[in-house]
Length: 488
Ligand code: ADP
Ligand code: MG
Image (cartoon, rainbow, N blue to C red; front, side, top):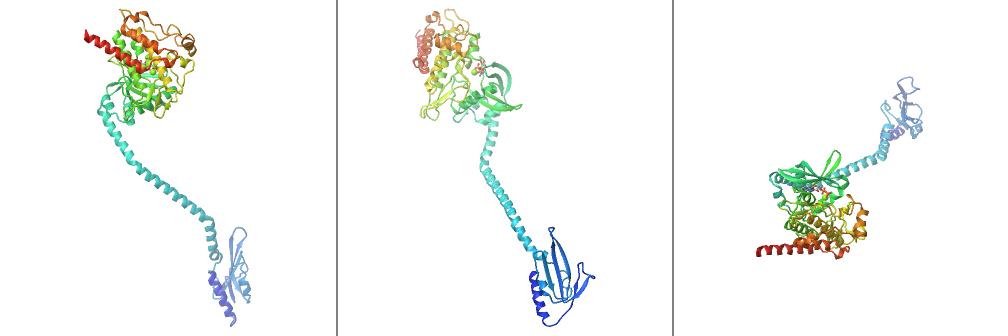
């Protein structure tokens, strides 16, 4: 339109040089007495009114040849002249002339925002796409997992615990995690069989089979973590280590429940067993030998693919040993265990604020001289505690028709629930040891066990027997007894 008006403007100059022609023009404005006027030039003025940016349009006629007026285009006022009948009727300027400016203004202000939004959307789309493709890549695993779940569920559905545990693969002694969870959630709790320092133990039923469910109190969650970790990373299947079935963490009533499911042993702990039962010397040897076999299995590092790191228990006591139906024992409660690998000389002490049971603490633990950076130290404290357990069993062994009542170690020297200081006074300061009756020396087995006890209780940790040495001695003893029986 601007171009057209310039064209009309130049044409008007040419025309005016020849004839004077009058045109009918549209008249619109305060000075118009009619809707039309006659003039030599039709004009349109458009004025932007103050800040409101309203456009006031006037139309009319110029009767003198003041074409300069036609060229007086200001920013806020535009004038357009034309030279034909009613040529000013439908002319607008700001709208047409300004539009490109408005567009450019729009482009300058809005376009960056639009571009930015488009960029953001593109970015979001790309991000979504990448995520999608990653999900697709991981989908086969998810499907596998789902499939495993179905397979596992069906395995679980048809199997006995024995079948399940025989199929155990992987580096740990545990079932695959999904099977562990499936099993755990199918267990029905039947009766509470024991309350420990930090939780309860229940007899549970899984597919008609008894299982033991240890429910950890929340303040002992580190023991659960530790035990779960060890059972799942270390191949610990051994007849003298409590058989692990599953570990599960569930959220119930907004609190976390930590379960450890193991084999159930009807005889309960060695502590329970010795309360109600006495044994003969052979039975005593069998209990003693089975415990030391379990302890040796823990203490030794086995190399190779089916190997295991060395483990020290740190809370060995009669309550943490269970008696199986075949009168062999198995060691339980690995919540405080420390793990050692020789190659990397790596000692993993864990992260458990719990300490061992005071009554069973070795002198170096009580006087705090233990070398906590040396794995050997922890094995030596286990041997100390083993000596005390041996003493508990021997007291319940019938020799020449005589037997003692069950008593815990140091029963006659410290109060019922001894403090750290009580134990320290007896074990470190006074260097007392449990009393060993003379009657024991009249029996070949018990006299041998007496010697082992004494050599497990040396004040100096390095002077004590090792678990392996004790196992060999007891095995020799057993073999010689069997030999003698065969000779007779
Ligand atoms: P503590 O803290 O004294 O070591 P635990 O919580 O380990 O006690 O166990 C408490 C009691 O639960 C044991 O003394 C034992 O009587 C019983 N118990 C633990 N585990 C089993 C099991 N696997 N089978 C049968 N009884 C068990
Ligand atoms: Mg325990």
